[in-house]
Length: 218
Image: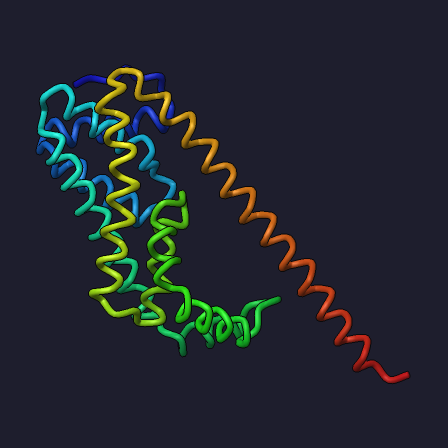
């Protein structure tokens, strides 16, 4: 399986993934997806359809493509879970104390929310660009039971992977269509996250200014 190069970083990445799959087969796709979990800018929306295309061309079976990419997703997620577990709530609180605009209470509220809704967050988070990797960190911070985290990650990752692997398998050389639609989803997620960040920043600055004004002597 060969891929034409136009000199872009994305094409270079695709060429590298294709080379890895040509070299070691389906485990190469799994390794690429594991790395994507650790480095979110790597686009699973490109890697997964390429694995499906390779399966369609007979490089390995569709089952192998789904199994290895899902195994890679789970392995990468557990690595980030371990990072969150190492960080822990106490270290996170200490880190937040040194950061502007954030309060220890923010950590406590987030932890309390995750303890109530963490299962849904992990499952559905595995199907959202960017967050699909990062959601493993708060799961580790709150020490979600490993069996529960593993099952939720496995289920969410399999659904996400299956959509893109099957798209590449069925679309063949037209797999780029998937990339276009996935790009729209990614931009939507980024827009929502950016809006929430701006809202939080503006609201927190207003709170700090109000507290400062109240503390000033008349």
